[in-house]
Length: 203
Image (cartoon, rainbow, N blue to C red):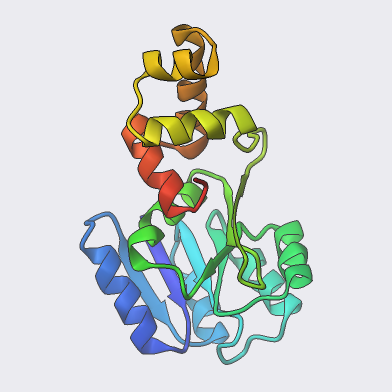
Protein backbone atom coordinates (compact mmCIF):
# COMPACT_ATOMS: atom_id res chain seq x y z
CA UNK A 1 0.00 0.00 0.00
CA UNK A 2 1.42 3.38 -1.01
CA UNK A 3 0.81 5.89 1.76
CA UNK A 4 1.71 9.58 2.00
CA UNK A 5 1.69 11.30 5.40
CA UNK A 6 1.30 15.06 5.13
CA UNK A 7 2.23 16.48 8.53
CA UNK A 8 4.77 19.06 9.73
CA UNK A 9 5.27 17.08 12.94
CA UNK A 10 8.17 15.12 11.45
CA UNK A 11 8.87 12.96 14.49
CA UNK A 12 5.28 11.72 14.53
CA UNK A 13 5.40 10.98 10.82
CA UNK A 14 8.64 9.05 11.26
CA UNK A 15 7.15 7.08 14.17
CA UNK A 16 4.12 6.11 12.09
CA UNK A 17 6.38 5.21 9.16
CA UNK A 18 8.54 2.98 11.40
CA UNK A 19 5.51 1.24 12.91
CA UNK A 20 3.98 0.51 9.51
CA UNK A 21 7.31 -0.62 8.06
CA UNK A 22 7.27 -3.58 10.48
CA UNK A 23 4.23 -5.01 8.68
CA UNK A 24 6.01 -5.05 5.32
CA UNK A 25 2.80 -3.87 3.64
CA UNK A 26 3.51 -0.16 3.21
CA UNK A 27 5.59 2.23 1.14
CA UNK A 28 5.48 5.52 3.08
CA UNK A 29 6.29 9.03 1.86
CA UNK A 30 6.50 12.01 4.24
CA UNK A 31 5.78 15.66 3.36
CA UNK A 32 5.56 18.66 5.67
CA UNK A 33 3.43 21.26 3.86
CA UNK A 34 0.47 21.54 1.51
CA UNK A 35 2.59 22.63 -1.45
CA UNK A 36 4.90 19.67 -0.97
CA UNK A 37 1.91 17.33 -0.87
CA UNK A 38 0.36 18.77 -4.04
CA UNK A 39 3.74 18.52 -5.79
CA UNK A 40 4.03 14.83 -4.85
CA UNK A 41 0.48 14.11 -5.97
CA UNK A 42 1.22 15.63 -9.37
CA UNK A 43 4.07 13.19 -10.01
CA UNK A 44 3.15 9.98 -8.13
CA UNK A 45 0.10 7.85 -7.32
CA UNK A 46 -0.84 6.83 -3.78
CA UNK A 47 -3.45 4.61 -2.18
CA UNK A 48 -4.05 6.72 0.95
CA UNK A 49 -3.27 10.30 1.93
CA UNK A 50 -3.11 11.05 5.68
CA UNK A 51 -3.73 14.81 5.86
CA UNK A 52 -2.88 17.01 8.83
CA UNK A 53 -5.14 20.07 8.98
CA UNK A 54 -2.62 22.35 10.70
CA UNK A 55 0.52 21.96 8.61
CA UNK A 56 1.84 24.96 6.62
CA UNK A 57 -0.38 25.96 3.70
CA UNK A 58 -3.58 24.45 5.05
CA UNK A 59 -6.54 26.86 5.18
CA UNK A 60 -9.62 24.90 6.14
CA UNK A 61 -12.11 23.28 3.80
CA UNK A 62 -10.71 24.90 0.66
CA UNK A 63 -7.35 23.23 1.23
CA UNK A 64 -8.99 19.87 1.90
CA UNK A 65 -10.87 20.21 -1.39
CA UNK A 66 -7.61 21.06 -3.20
CA UNK A 67 -6.08 17.83 -1.91
CA UNK A 68 -9.16 15.83 -2.90
CA UNK A 69 -9.04 17.32 -6.39
CA UNK A 70 -5.36 16.37 -6.72
CA UNK A 71 -5.67 12.94 -5.09
CA UNK A 72 -6.50 10.95 -8.19
CA UNK A 73 -7.60 7.52 -6.99
CA UNK A 74 -6.18 7.95 -3.49
CA UNK A 75 -8.37 7.92 -0.39
CA UNK A 76 -7.92 11.07 1.72
CA UNK A 77 -8.23 10.70 5.50
CA UNK A 78 -7.81 13.49 8.04
CA UNK A 79 -4.90 12.97 10.43
CA UNK A 80 -5.14 15.43 13.30
CA UNK A 81 -5.29 15.78 17.06
CA UNK A 82 -8.70 17.40 17.43
CA UNK A 83 -11.56 18.02 15.05
CA UNK A 84 -14.88 19.85 15.03
CA UNK A 85 -17.75 17.50 14.23
CA UNK A 86 -19.35 19.89 11.73
CA UNK A 87 -16.06 20.34 9.87
CA UNK A 88 -15.59 16.56 9.76
CA UNK A 89 -19.08 16.15 8.35
CA UNK A 90 -18.36 18.75 5.67
CA UNK A 91 -15.12 16.98 4.74
CA UNK A 92 -16.84 13.60 4.48
CA UNK A 93 -19.49 15.18 2.25
CA UNK A 94 -16.70 16.36 -0.06
CA UNK A 95 -15.24 12.85 -0.27
CA UNK A 96 -12.85 12.49 2.67
CA UNK A 97 -12.78 8.88 3.88
CA UNK A 98 -12.78 9.66 7.58
CA UNK A 99 -10.61 10.67 10.49
CA UNK A 100 -7.55 9.08 12.11
CA UNK A 101 -6.81 10.84 15.41
CA UNK A 102 -3.16 11.27 16.34
CA UNK A 103 -4.01 9.63 19.66
CA UNK A 104 -4.89 6.33 17.94
CA UNK A 105 -2.63 3.47 19.10
CA UNK A 106 -0.13 2.61 16.39
CA UNK A 107 -1.12 -1.07 16.61
CA UNK A 108 -4.65 -0.12 15.50
CA UNK A 109 -3.56 2.01 12.57
CA UNK A 110 -2.92 -0.92 10.23
CA UNK A 111 -6.51 -2.17 10.59
CA UNK A 112 -7.91 1.33 10.07
CA UNK A 113 -5.85 1.87 6.91
CA UNK A 114 -6.95 -1.44 5.41
CA UNK A 115 -10.59 -0.57 6.07
CA UNK A 116 -10.10 2.78 4.35
CA UNK A 117 -8.36 1.14 1.39
CA UNK A 118 -11.32 -1.24 1.05
CA UNK A 119 -13.55 1.78 0.39
CA UNK A 120 -15.01 2.35 3.84
CA UNK A 121 -15.24 5.61 5.72
CA UNK A 122 -13.55 5.32 9.11
CA UNK A 123 -14.51 7.50 12.09
CA UNK A 124 -13.28 5.81 15.30
CA UNK A 125 -14.06 8.53 17.84
CA UNK A 126 -16.30 11.52 18.15
CA UNK A 127 -14.38 14.80 17.93
CA UNK A 128 -15.12 15.46 21.61
CA UNK A 129 -13.31 12.24 22.51
CA UNK A 130 -16.30 10.04 23.39
CA UNK A 131 -15.56 6.48 22.19
CA UNK A 132 -17.52 5.62 19.10
CA UNK A 133 -16.75 3.51 16.06
CA UNK A 134 -18.51 4.08 12.78
CA UNK A 135 -17.98 2.48 9.41
CA UNK A 136 -19.85 3.24 6.25
CA UNK A 137 -19.34 2.71 2.58
CA UNK A 138 -21.33 2.95 -0.60
CA UNK A 139 -23.61 -0.04 -0.76
CA UNK A 140 -22.41 -1.39 2.57
CA UNK A 141 -24.30 -1.02 5.86
CA UNK A 142 -22.92 -0.94 9.42
CA UNK A 143 -23.07 -3.99 11.64
CA UNK A 144 -26.59 -4.63 12.95
CA UNK A 145 -27.35 -5.02 16.66
CA UNK A 146 -27.73 -8.78 16.15
CA UNK A 147 -24.39 -8.98 14.34
CA UNK A 148 -22.65 -6.99 17.09
CA UNK A 149 -24.15 -9.34 19.70
CA UNK A 150 -22.96 -12.42 17.80
CA UNK A 151 -19.52 -10.82 17.29
CA UNK A 152 -19.19 -10.18 21.03
CA UNK A 153 -20.05 -13.81 21.81
CA UNK A 154 -17.63 -15.08 19.18
CA UNK A 155 -14.90 -12.77 20.51
CA UNK A 156 -15.51 -14.29 23.96
CA UNK A 157 -14.66 -17.68 22.51
CA UNK A 158 -18.10 -19.20 22.00
CA UNK A 159 -18.58 -21.63 19.10
CA UNK A 160 -21.31 -21.21 16.49
CA UNK A 161 -23.27 -23.99 18.16
CA UNK A 162 -23.01 -22.30 21.57
CA UNK A 163 -24.00 -18.92 20.11
CA UNK A 164 -27.00 -20.48 18.37
CA UNK A 165 -28.15 -22.06 21.63
CA UNK A 166 -27.53 -18.87 23.61
CA UNK A 167 -29.65 -16.60 21.39
CA UNK A 168 -32.15 -19.22 20.19
CA UNK A 169 -31.34 -19.31 16.48
CA UNK A 170 -29.99 -22.07 14.23
CA UNK A 171 -26.30 -22.73 13.76
CA UNK A 172 -26.74 -22.11 10.03
CA UNK A 173 -28.08 -18.62 10.81
CA UNK A 174 -25.08 -17.93 13.03
CA UNK A 175 -22.75 -18.92 10.18
CA UNK A 176 -24.64 -16.60 7.84
CA UNK A 177 -24.28 -13.70 10.29
CA UNK A 178 -20.56 -14.43 10.72
CA UNK A 179 -20.05 -14.32 6.94
CA UNK A 180 -21.77 -10.92 6.82
CA UNK A 181 -19.70 -9.67 9.76
CA UNK A 182 -16.43 -10.73 8.11
CA UNK A 183 -17.47 -9.13 4.82
CA UNK A 184 -18.35 -5.81 6.45
CA UNK A 185 -15.14 -5.70 8.50
CA UNK A 186 -12.93 -6.96 5.69
CA UNK A 187 -11.87 -9.81 7.99
CA UNK A 188 -10.38 -13.12 6.87
CA UNK A 189 -12.15 -15.15 9.55
CA UNK A 190 -13.96 -14.84 12.90
CA UNK A 191 -10.73 -14.44 14.87
CA UNK A 192 -9.59 -11.64 12.58
CA UNK A 193 -13.05 -10.03 12.90
CA UNK A 194 -12.74 -10.09 16.68
CA UNK A 195 -9.31 -8.45 16.52
CA UNK A 196 -10.48 -5.72 14.15
CA UNK A 197 -13.64 -5.02 16.15
CA UNK A 198 -11.72 -4.66 19.42
CA UNK A 199 -9.08 -2.39 17.88
CA UNK A 200 -11.82 -0.18 16.42
CA UNK A 201 -13.82 -0.18 19.68
CA UNK A 202 -16.85 -1.85 18.15
CA UNK A 203 -17.10 -4.29 21.05
